[in-house]
Length: 239
Image (cartoon, rainbow, N blue to C red):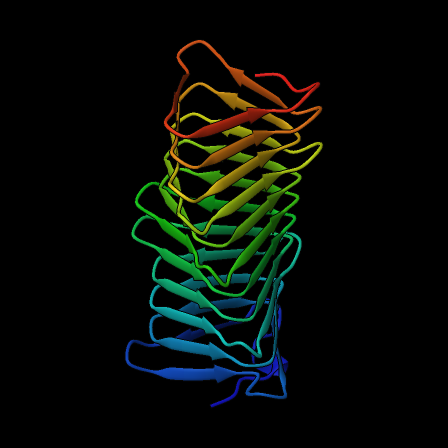
């Protein structure tokens, strides 16, 4: 069943019940929500999806490789189930991966709004995945990166970040990373910094950390750096 924009106007709601499956924007169409969607079944997006209202997922939300899903300014997407992205997601509003929520990215995730991975939540960026952040990402749960993460905004880690063997995290000029929890740079992984990294938690490096010219890494009171491999400070950088 394909749902069209006229199904969910402002102020209206749609509930996908447990066991039900809905295909939004099947292959060539478009889907727009300006009201309220509650998913307790399965939703598949193959085309162009726009959420400018409230979208609560408690089961399965899949954005296919052909899918483009936009979470607009002042909109809210809350995930307490599973979100699988193989296409493109653009967030200018708020996305919350709540307790026991799982978000898996194997496509492109562009964030200029707020993305929160709450306590108990799991965020995984697979080797084919890319995350480009110019807004705010707050990790209170567990985040694993096997692909590419680029940051020119703010990343705040209160929980655990694991940068796996194929993972590359780049903090560009103007970007800020706050490590309050644990940040593990595993063997084969890379963290490049041209912005600011403030550490009041723990960073464990078994891979490669490069602090480029103009980059600043501040190991503040209570912070711990555990380096087991390569840590390179370029000229005019500071750690």
